[in-house]
Amino acid sequence: MRIVVALAIVSSLVMAVPAEAQTRLPRTSPAERNTDAINRRIQQDQQILGVEQDIQSKSNQIRQNVDRDRLFAPRYLPPVPRAGCGRGRIC
Image 1 (cartoon, rainbow, N blue to C red):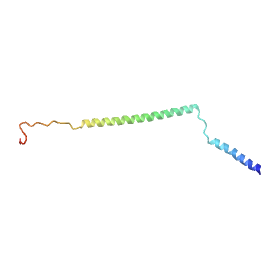
Image 2 (cartoon, rainbow, N blue to C red):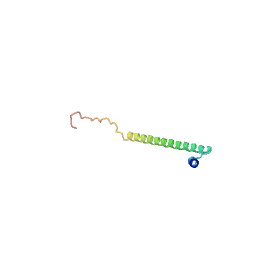
Image 3 (cartoon, rainbow, N blue to C red):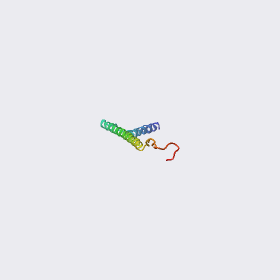
Image 4 (tube, rainbow, N blue to C red):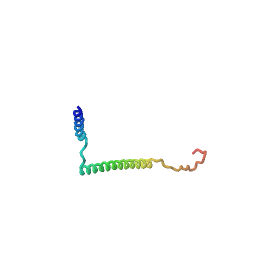
């Protein structure tokens, strides 16, 4: 009986090892690691480019707002002197 139990335990351990081995991923090759690194750099460059484009867009928007404000800003006009009319007189 002990032998049967021992064989059952050993066989369950032997059966479990191949199942665990199948869940592990194979090692990546140097070429695959290099490709992954290049792809990461490309993604980072694209993110940086997107941020730079956002900054440029916002800068242009601010510049347009400032130009519009300058164009339509009220201008100071000096008072026009009335010739011949003093204070309190009707002309």
